Length: 365
Ligand code: FES
Image 1 (cartoon, rainbow, N blue to C red):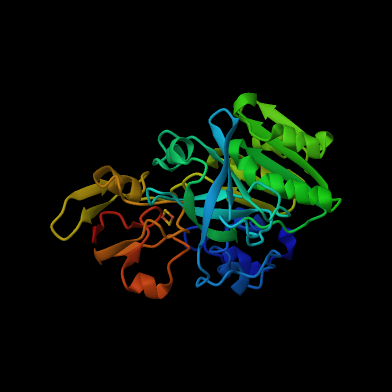
Image 2: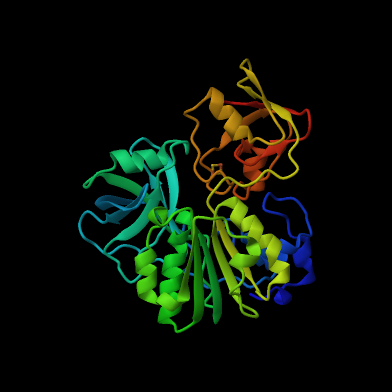
């Protein structure tokens, strides 16, 4: 989508945390998740083509691990298949899976295989020693034959099929871009992928990408590229698809105005940055501990210091895994998941939601 196609009302869109804002970035933003986009749709913005949403009542899948192998330093590739060999539900480039691990942890991973292969789903997982244990469990405890509950593919980063594409990958952020690159090649589109990583050994799928079209893949190894450098290959009107760590996304965002690129689609895989945070307190139960939440920390991070088993997944306010019940206090809801009814009933997602300065939230945990 070219940002010029957006109506003026787009500047009144809420930001990623539900607050009004007139950020230029939002004028470029075209994709940030199925749960983020209803607000865009209601404003008449063009939606990305995608498969019809799966009704929430469709049962989750039980899949078996049929492949588990290292594909780069600290990165394993997992293949998941139906235990009976049945064909798996279809998906489109950019889609992700939500896995429920044997421990009960839930994690989201982009599908990085070929949508034409309906016999297995492929994901890749980087080992994150301080990432809450999900990646360690996948690396160390998931073996061939283990069965997992997996929600059907959802697409939070849909590929719109623009004619000119610049794909920007940072580290494991290459995973959703690999099927997008493959699809772009199939359609004969003009695409280029810039893939940045801290060393060649840590960058999965480089050979597979080169095999698609070596002249269309640029590797930036061992340094952090600037936004301008990442956008260097953008042609006038190119749609930019970016997936990587938060600093990379911010760098691209800042450099966008000076580039000839058009739309920006992005997927973030780290916790959302805290914007305009103020300190407040949370209390664990009516008679429990009171904890300070500093302006630059999430309530979830603070709560997990006292309750390390508190579940979470996306850390971005869209999956709902960290949901807690509010007993007292006035929250500042910044998620994109809860309905107004759920909020009125006291539901709260502490990974992103906060409170006004000095507010005291009592939680039923
Ligand atoms: S962890 Fe996903 S909504 Fe909080």
